[in-house]
Image 1: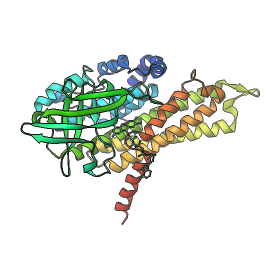
Image 2: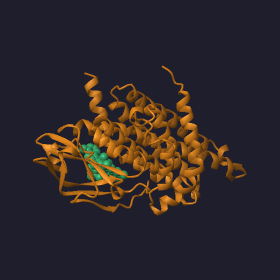
Image 3: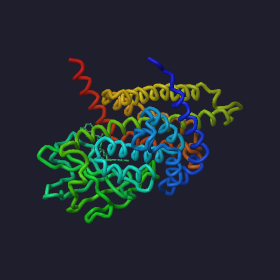
Image 4: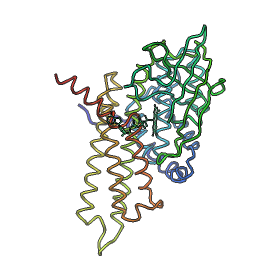
Length: 376
Ligand SMILES: Cc1cc2nc3c(=O)[nH]c(=O)nc-3n(C[C@H](O)[C@H](O)[C@H](O)COP(=O)(O)OP(=O)(O)OC[C@H]3O[C@@H](n4cnc5c(N)ncnc54)[C@H](O)[C@@H]3O)c2cc1C
């Protein structure tokens, strides 16, 4: 076992950290207030080579490990959780296209996605535990086409999406994926939801009304959808957990700095044992969560099964982020409740991570089933 990050991983961390302090933090609060997509920072992330970091070199990427990407996500989330999530969403789509798309599909979509020329959404139903027949999108084969219909709610990026990877039921027990461009007749997106946190990440409904999708635009084989969704969710869960760690670290730093500077009863807040206990608990939790996240990403890099570890990392890190931010707000006293201080945004952003990529209750159910299976 080696707990040492590689030179490249350390370099990734320090370069993204510096970028975030300089470019992301000054904009994050305002973009959150206005619920505006962080286009400038997103495009800058393209220039930093983050979107295609994990793509193999032979198709234009840098062939970096997933753990390095996850370290980058943690750092982006330190400044803006919404920006970090939007980057993770693009990486996940590019990864899907790399694994399942035909050469033509790859050439058509990957360069535009990683260059921020287009934004994509993934229209899937997270609650796969339900029967396939309850899947909200249906696709019926019609010669060289499929006719896709249905509606999915709460899809990140949907309001701004130029294309979607849409998952639909294609047979009695099959789920298949399709690439659908915005200009296709019958494709529409709903209004942007007004979210409590991570407000710079647009969330909305995506509807397909008798959309004709050519067989050439099917992603992978018919029936590959379930495996793809599980792979997507596993990958995104690790990214969500990394976002939660980034938020926790930001809350820890703000609370620690504030407690050293605020004088009450003739001494700084940091002198009070009650404050020290809060800071120590957040710091200990952050270390533990980070290790869980890195372990799950490491398993991905080893092409090993990471279902349980990604779920555990997501549940632990997101619950911790909410608790850490709550205490960070408390350490700020009344000021913590005011928008002039970033901890209130961190708290709102943290709550997102407990619902996103399946609720923590659903994730706990999954973890328990895996444990019951392991312990006979
Ligand atoms: C920011 C954001 C992004 C999202 N992205 C997507 C997406 O990309 N794709 C997608 O399909 N959906 C997405 N969703 C929707 C999300 O998957 C659902 O909101 C979530 O699954 C919960 O479903 P619900 O809102 O209907 O709540 P409900 O199912 O009504 O659940 C309410 C509460 O009860 C708990 N609960 C429900 N059933 C049980 C049970 N059997 N046992 C114990 N507790 C239970 C839940 O965990 C939750 O705490 C997103 C939501 C948000 C807020």
